[in-house]
Length: 304
Ligand code: SAM
Image (tube, rainbow, N blue to C red; front, side, top):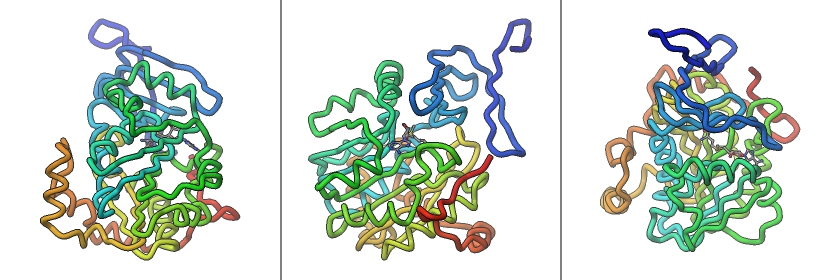
């Protein structure tokens, strides 16, 4: 707590690496407590408005959550010729499900998140994110460990989206960034199936970003790293897309503009779609330094 312009301000420190932190002015705390899996903090911040923090890290904010969620969801959905069945693992805020359900071809969308308590908090306080999409007749919400759910389901899906917390040491998502897990995903995808995973910050975790993309490329014939600038994350956020057949950069242009045009998006348009996949030389050179892939025996973990 500190004085600013004559009134008391609560400051919240978010560590982005062992060398860098950001402090947020907190106007109001809506929820702060522990669930079985993580610390959940929902606060009104000075810069980004309502913001969800898990274990101290910003997950999304009302300022630009749509940038992250549109970038995560639509390249994979558009890479599949006609996505009808979609599986989301993680995605607690419900915004990933919201974006998936914008596609008119979708008949069934299953969201599996490990933290049921978090989902109740989100349903109550984060309506701007989920917009009641949990009640859509096409949607099914399951509280379970995503890895276990995938191993046990007999269903196949057209698109599988991993919207998980970072693979930080000691957190529930680490094993969901491994070769063995992506092989399980490959087996549960239909013929033209596509997967995508959030792949952490290209600035603070270029090693994790590169290793995640290497690992997806070790399983899928078509693999594309991409990124989008998310102000709430102070960096270009990374993603890794794996496809059994189609290449996002090979989608016929008229099909792309027609399908994108129908979605009514706030961030993603045709120009930005292609720009997502463009990497400057210095970043390509940095990524080349990391050849490792993440496995169950040797999982890549972010150490802070
Ligand atoms: N947008 C965020 C980001 O980039 O950091 C992630 C969004 S979301 C909040 C992350 C979700 O992953 C959380 O709701 C968490 O409960 C869920 N999660 C973590 N590990 C999981 C697991 N093993 N199975 C299913 N959900 C998991």
